Image (cartoon, rainbow, N blue to C red):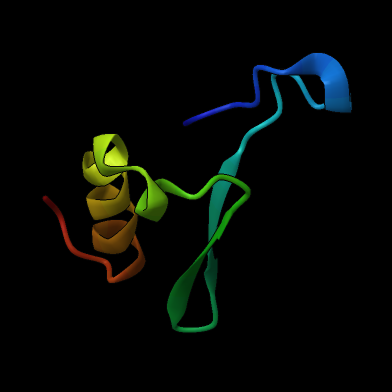
Length: 56
């Protein structure tokens, strides 16, 4: 799971993305924006697959 690397915010080492089951579904909270960086496409795909309870 990605973590913050910049200690300027005091969050170095904290998870940047987290997911949890909620009711009968799943939710993801992301402090980063993998949808904005084409290099993070695999991460975005994995997030979508996890949230939709599919494997990839």
